[in-house]
Image (cartoon, rainbow, N blue to C red; front, side, top):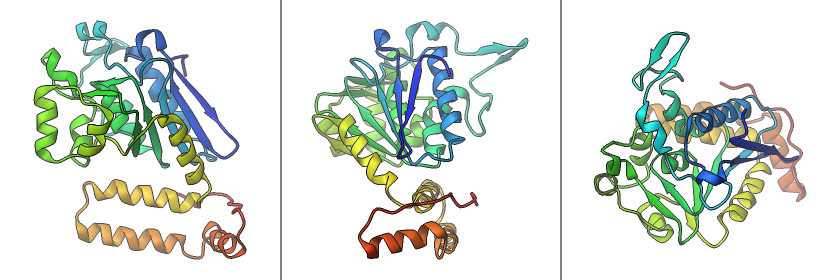
Length: 271
């Protein structure tokens, strides 16, 4: 990773991921995108990982795309030019993966958002499973201001969070909303004075639950966005069968009955 993104993994398996370009309000340049992608790769390979807290250094979560990037939307590597249409990360291109990659991580991701989250910055926050915000935060689907559309997985992520007419109104207008409205319309989960402290507390609570059950729950919730009912019912049954009688599931039961903290072991192999 480069110095644009800083990770700290504590003894409970909670990763603190900090966007670290405070002098530019964590605006997205090529190095920031590369840093986010590298951070996601590192976290994906970490067997001790239980939860992620994502936040920004300084005055803002992320001010969006660095204006200088408007001049060059494609990239070139080894003599080949890549366009936004090229799928470089599975179903996504690199900018899309900076947001969608949090959804792809096997554990819950909680974004603590303060200051501003505009355009691409908001889309990165939308990639988290949970969003905690301050009351005075400023959020905007701002691409229309620059004659553009949300293209960092924003449309795919908005569709499960807000009503269709709300998504359209926010996208067509580019207007700025605060934390209280964000909770009302569905963009945010909780609003309060200290979203980072709240996110860290929630992450620690998640880390104390069975890691196998948490990962299974996230897989099911991810599938629920696109899967039909029949497929989801089958997925529920298969995930539950894998969990029932497994070492961590039995430890969860024993710990609950004995009124003690659980001591979970190795993860089940991914299905």
